[in-house]
Length: 499
Image (cartoon, rainbow, N blue to C red):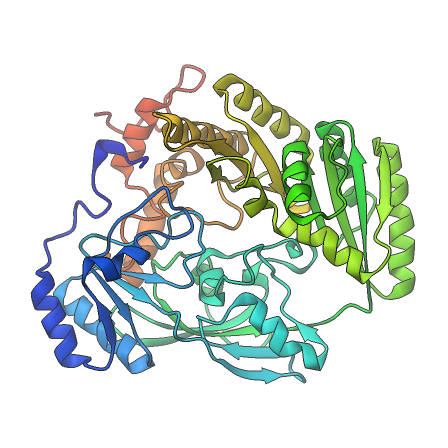
């Protein structure tokens, strides 16, 4: 694990009497499922970032809101940390449990409470799968737009916690743009509603603040999302390129032409070969890169946009352009992209999935930088990403059983994120910071900004009991990280003491 000072994740937390806590919780919540034996806890030791593992002290699986409220109240009174977990598909260690804390699993809150086709909204519990919302809305000609690649399994509560995106977020926005209201419980067990079904809500925009807060401010109990009408027409163009940088430049050219695609995705040769071997999507395996460009709307507009994009792609140097013949082939094209992550997993014992965002104009430069890092460190990198909004997902291939390779993969990943910051981007687009990127927060933000983040956290959770050790680094951590990473002869944050 990439942890400075070699501390435990919850090393600063006070000791908790596990047996006494089990007895107390069982007495007050006899009907709630509470796991405490090692064999029962083992399945919950990590989220989707399986390289980081911690065995939780306890796992609670409540069935009712009253149980969650009581559990939080007890943990607050006794100073016991709580980490909330949904489906466990997160890729940044955000739901990594604590050795001295309770893992609160909300997967049983899986009911769709209401679909309102006239208001185009859905009220759902946090354990509802992302895809299940669109399935429930489909009879009304509606759907929920944000569609992470894990949408068949990931929960909407986790989507809100991480501000998840997906292949269609370029045109339709991230989770934060598609959520109207969220009901939460504070660590004290108090109920708060953030946002409303109105177009605007008085006061500070706490809903936007909460979305993407990674379980550090409260526990989600209910979510109201926007639903959109299914487009009349949707078509996908697949363009092949003999050069990755040409494909990267073509992305900016499409947007500059005044076209905002429903989705604009890019895959390099390694990812293309992996996806084709896995899905048989008809991808050109000899191409250095492909772009998938989906255009949707009314039929006439889609037809015109397809012609415009085709001309742009030809001018950008595309060697081949294919229009999906029908909805079946369109779905197959997308199946290859959405299964790219598991497909790459067949090519290597392990891979490390990164998540950074950059300005579109910097795509060629960053792709070259990633290729240089790959060559320098001897680790293959497959690039699969949401090209339209600059959200990159380099997959660093390694073998965890080979001594030093995990650490090397982490080092390369950190350098990729720092490159994203250098060109004006961010260390995360949708996976969150969690435990994985906490060091790179020090490269992204100044000490004053990090101090403000801690103040926001303290306003919601004064004792720091919700998901401690995640997302926001301490200034001491940043000082140590800066001492270890000297760039161009200058230390980051020179005003901080070094150790």
